[in-house]
Image 1 (cartoon, rainbow, N blue to C red):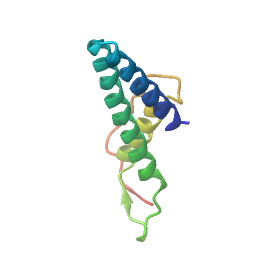
Image 2 (cartoon, helix red, strand yellow):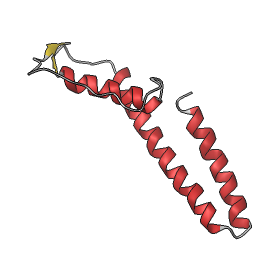
Image 3 (cartoon, rainbow, N blue to C red):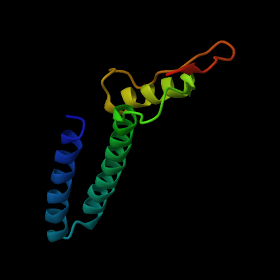
Length: 101
């Protein structure tokens, strides 16, 4: 769903841009093309986040920076829109020592 929705939107924007160009409405076509560019950026972020979380490490367990990993998880939740919120803030008290994972 996270990839199909932007792909469907890209297809619709592209088809409509062709129609607007044919009618001489370049301004609206340009807006559609800009939106396509924004959607492809979004898809890139989603796929990069998914790759980060789906990779199996080939090496032994090693120290992991928990706040960094938490922020990556928050970014993924916000990017996919699953949380129903537009902002999540990570607060930490003092230094958090790395964990072995």
